[in-house]
Length: 121
Image 1 (cartoon, helix red, strand yellow):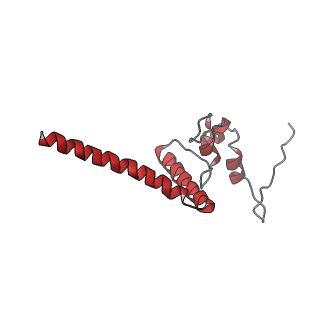
Image 2: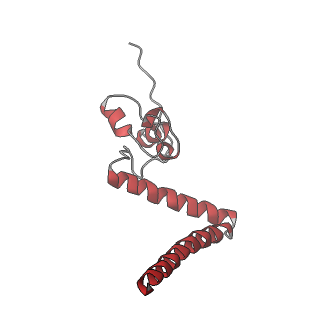
Image 3: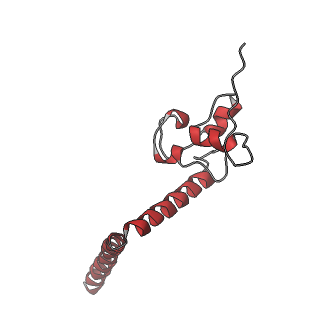
């Protein structure tokens, strides 16, 4: 009987700690000013992208990886946000997402992309 009560109390303590940590984390975020919130969101996004890269779900063609494919479902990630398939698109001689395309373009002395005119065929 004592063991059952002890286990129930232990489980309640663990569950309470998990719930408190979630509430505390939310309160911490809400107490930040808007610029600090923005920085935290960007940091969390970049960490999530890095984990997706490590797991093989994010195969971007530029470094640092684009964020466009992670943040929204689109034609360049087969309409599955959180993934990137731009490397496959390039291998198939197709255009990557606009952010990757800009990262891959040739740049002038000011860092602006040089637009290549399509040749008439």
